[in-house]
Length: 394
Image 1 (tube, rainbow, N blue to C red):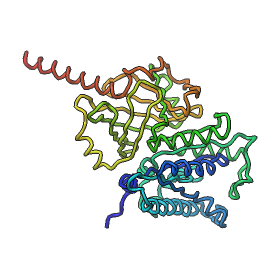
Image 2 (tube, rainbow, N blue to C red; image 1 turned 180 degrees about the horizontal axis):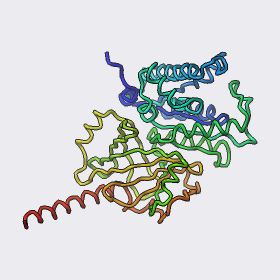
Image 3 (cartoon, rainbow, N blue to C red; image 1 turned 90 degrees about the horizontal axis):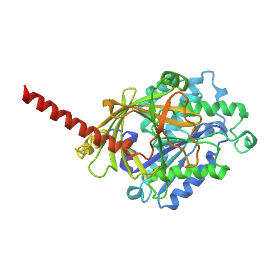
Image 4 (cartoon, helix red, strand yellow; image 1 turned 90 degrees about the vertical axis):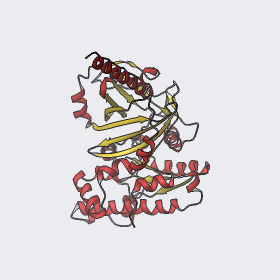
């Protein structure tokens, strides 16, 4: 019998998978316990996958035990995959999951290995030991990735985790490596320490989980800026190790609330289905899920004929502890758009210095993707009419 792919399991089981990651002493353990309590209170099953490295370390399997560091990574990766598979199976067969769905919250994920090992070694282990493609796993394995920053120095401690030995300086370095390992994921959320207190930090994590699960009250916040004259583009890409993704987006019949996207990175395509409110506000409800290529093709049968597909190249990068997305539209649909998703409305945006920011267009309907798609469709109809008229004249 054919072994199901991970994204097929998630889709069929209506399960969302979240990798909760961060540097040492970032608050992950507290956040996970509160996530479980919150999601279960909604009547949705939630389970947590324990951190593989900690499990091995507290039971005597440490990096120092191995002369070959790649061999240790093989054990870590094997443990991550084994844990996630085990808890996924348990969650799939839990009562109510087939109707209401579920949440698999992973204490760290596969990409965390890149903070401790080189990418080629990780790719090799995944391919040879488990038959997995690293490029596919980075985008399709986790519905959302939440990175929690290392606690401020005055609150940093090693006493609450038997496996934690790093100094604060070492923790900061590991935190930076960890977040960079996830750059390029389509749904990466950065949670820093600027929320007044630790409770505010955890509440921000909960808010993003709630938005993912489609609870009505949470808010997906996006800020958009019109960009002109990308003079410092090359510098930005080089300094921030920006990741390029090519996107084709189709709106489905209706009022613009449903869309599908083909999201291609390094030749590997992942498909998404999104439902999002189209009201003029910086706070919008959004739910999104990874779908199979077959489901993507089926949904395209409902493509809105009044909307042209939007094709764009997107560059993901981190600047000033914020996750930015820079969109270059094909077909001259509009100028470049810079997007950022702060955690709260009150978050002050520190825009990159490389670009000439013309103005903020968050509330300008002209720059809603739905309206861009409609405008493109009208332009193409007009161009077709001109061509037909020209042919008739000939």
